[in-house]
Picture 1 (cartoon, helix red, strand yellow):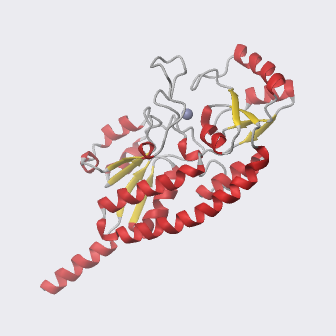
Picture 2 (picture 1 turned 180 degrees about the vertical axis):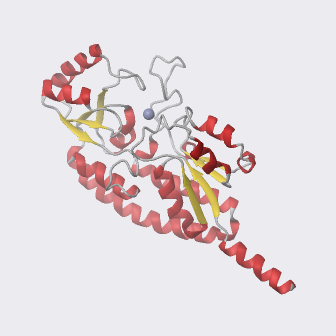
Picture 3 (picture 1 turned 60 degrees about the vertical axis):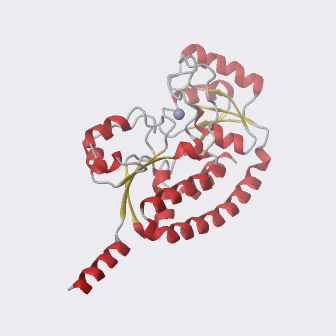
Length: 290
Ligand SMILES: [Zn+2]
């Protein structure tokens, strides 16, 4: 009998899965890559949604209620929707030390405002939270996920390490490929709807000269749009990198007035039907721009 109990304990230990809630699809993909068969991921949003404004529906509350761990983007990207979700779920496991990982703490943020007023817009007072769109940040994120999963499940730490290592080896080849694909665009300028792609543009030496939003989180206005027409004629940005979840109405107006092109650009896994993982996210972003 004792032997049976011992065997049971051994096998349930080997096959136990960590249940991990994650806020965005790219985190789901990276967590599955590192965690493999030992994690079960509960995704709290979809890739074609506006990441700033997820609706904390009851179905999301029940997803969070049963999990052991939570991985978030951080840098206030979830500030409008995750706190109410967590308080409704009242999951005691997540109140324990080191059961929540905030990925923003593993990277260097850019666009940090120098003043604390909201003069720069309605969102992102702590800096730009869209750091996963610099492909060079991705290995920093999988390292953070490996450390986090290993601390909470030391039994499988060697597998987490092996999975992460294999991923990073392939990723470094991807980085070289993307670097050479983007080289012809170095030094060029773009317009964006929202500063979603600042990390991506910085990685490849491109510049964002304006956003269709007058300030981050503020919808387009007639006076700002008219200024953009002048700016397009003067600075000649080659395209508008447009997210998939805002209306392209203002972008199309700008196109009518200036002949600038519009590049529909995925910001996360699932933003477009062919973007099924983080590698395809960058393949599509880069492929659409070229
Ligand atoms: Zn944003």
